[in-house]
Length: 328
Image 1 (tube, rainbow, N blue to C red):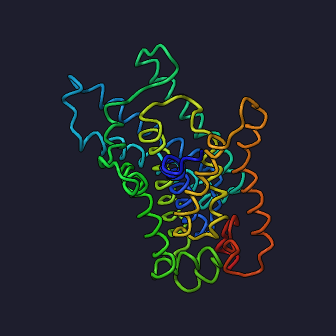
Image 2: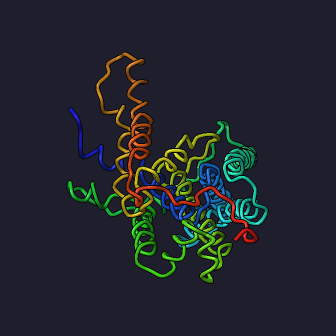
């Protein structure tokens, strides 16, 4: 039978990295920057947290000497720093040097995965592990710590680590800022028509830098959540999967609205694990077909979105285009 009480929490934890990734990419795209390097940014955010947690655990004389606040803050700050550097690199290439955004984003994904695998493999060798993975159980326990609940309501709403609730808060705040504040209005103006925004006295490059770097740090938290909470602190190279690409698709699914992304990300998370709950017997071919469900839904959403005629459902008009101020 379909166990809804176990399905919903698992769908939520699958959806949290997608929510953080899509929220960060939405902020980025609202400024007119199309960052296809989000998978690499999330990967660097994950390995940044792993590096911080690893060296903090190595510095302890014993596991009992761990300080909970430092066990959370050190990986968190390292993750934010790593993803911030990726955002700055993207902005330097696309905003300052005006490089092609599509090519830069794809290169950033390859670069981020390579950086993550390099440092991940190095840490595994330093730890002297017998298997190609690294376990950081001491620090990850503080990321996955939740309330001791046993009721159905508690399992569905209160059984997650703090990053899951932080992801929802960030998405709701981002949605409010974009729609109801002057900063959000200026950001949307930069994404729609940078020439007009510049003529109105808005610093286009500053908004692009701030929005892209902030979005990269939010996306990096998605990678940190995956390793520290979902994977229980276990790092293995190339273990992140294709969640970064699903996060980019989720931006289109939510019509560039972070608040809509809360439920949408959990829906995508449920589709991602649906094959585990659909009976398929011993037929592995059928199970592989079930694994295609989230990608089929993504294609359908892209087709439906492209058929919409409403302007508010379309991407920012200047998305993916470099801004040349001298042409204003």
